[in-house]
Length: 228
Image (cartoon, rainbow, N blue to C red; front, side):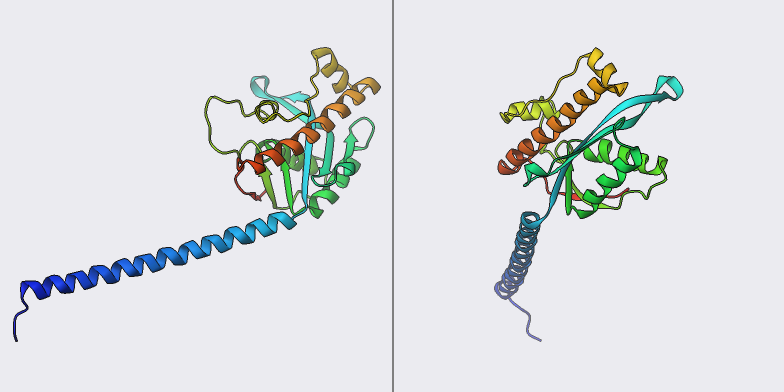
């Protein structure tokens, strides 16, 4: 058998490298096409999704070890992001807690996506605990967008809702309450309920405007599934 010359061997290597490069380029193009298709599908899904923005207020209720404070939900406000007139509010002291939770659950189940600030670590677990405490079915898994946890990475900026809204120049203000006002609210007096109502509604209104601006600027990662 005739031995291959160095030139022939190098030619074969060039052919192999070229084939491998073309195969890699084809794979990369295929992956890019899939990613574009997935992104387009997600954009279409989110555009057609029914999105519920909500917020809760809580009061301290009991102590555990080392003075760790446990609480209970005193208010829930919820609104469809594209229907500001749909705002609903439930207040402990005015509404029965089971009525509050069941009414919110109806909206939660209707929503394709729920959104709130720190929703995964705060509001959803608190609501699930309240459902459990009152003998109601716990929340199902749901697509959610957390405007704190899903915010793009950054440093030296506060991630509180009020701070982010300020950075984005959102005109809706957060309702501030003094210690005497909080004590009034947590005692569920008539005056206190009015304060709580104003605060929880204000948080939702501010959040809807803030989230819209965050989406416009590309500052939020896509919604993902929260599981109880």
